[in-house]
Length: 330
Image 1 (cartoon, rainbow, N blue to C red):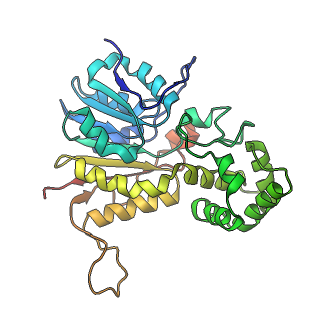
Image 2: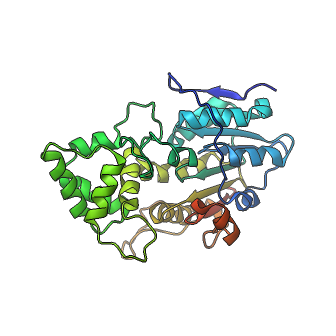
Image 3: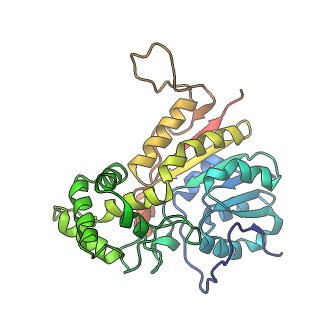
């Protein structure tokens, strides 16, 4: 079979020379909720390197998958990995905020299941040039789509105010030392020595944050997370993505979302509750204003966590949480 149908939305795609290993997180648990059916259509809204999509395609001889990802490098590797499935696999370069547009463009009808794995991919974390990790000294980029014209983390740090930066680090990183970190970053910028690389930022945060010797997490982790979320507007679009997914699913279709930090998980939890009919309004408001309506059944009373075995085999799965819901008849 030939390559899957691939629709790229940006030009000058980089050539990838080597295949990257990828262990999809909570794979069996996700499949258990999706229950792929013969001839079913499933949408992987964060395709990455294609691990979840591959498992869905292998589950039945005629399942179909639409894959979405904004990372051009990941799309090339996923395209190679999934080429043997031919027309059963369609891949689009897009942000999952465009899910409704992509489903319409694919022209295969509404999906029986939708999944989203919201973690940063191994490909991105292991990149020595993308700036997602402080394991490598690289420019502070952090864009999920490195070929886009969106502002990089370094460009943001070059112009943002101290108060706005402190708010980003506190809100998205839940970092108590956010104001001190922001002040030090701005002071370096104003002295003519701006923070422009991952090593510079990680060292600055390490000096600014009081650390507990027993803490296994690098003190810069929360700040890097905050900047990445801000650059890619990850939380801004998540609630709308869930709403669009519920609209698009067939009756009895499943939405499964894997998160990797408390901010994402909180948004997913509350959105699922709202679509399950639980009002999110303050108790003293006489009339519901949040739009709660019973459109789904929540399948996970508590988030599903990776087993100890998976955590040992794939340390990056340790913070993963899976929540799933099923669309009801209207």
